[in-house]
Length: 139
Image (cartoon, rainbow, N blue to C red; front, side):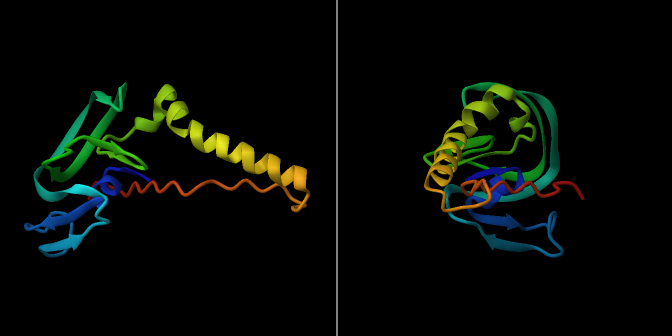
């Protein structure tokens, strides 16, 4: 599972919007609970473009968010869960290739098995569930 920006924030335990910056009224939402962190929406909105050190890569990207995270402010990766506030991470060819390589190998194995067994008339490519939620971060 990989989340970018708002998708990254949804991986946390809780999301707090005390000043109604991202909601119609002040509220607290329950996240997916996959990261041991909480999001607090605060002004000013972070608007930044630059070169980021993420996942052992130098990635050109940008941030546009009000959510602040204390434990993992920029990115997180552990096991099957990863994410970042930085948009554009998948525009980096080396990162994208390395990150998606295990999924591509899975597709090749499944596709080969389907052709060999002849159980399927049409070649269907199935992707493992990669949840990438990139909502519009601006208002």
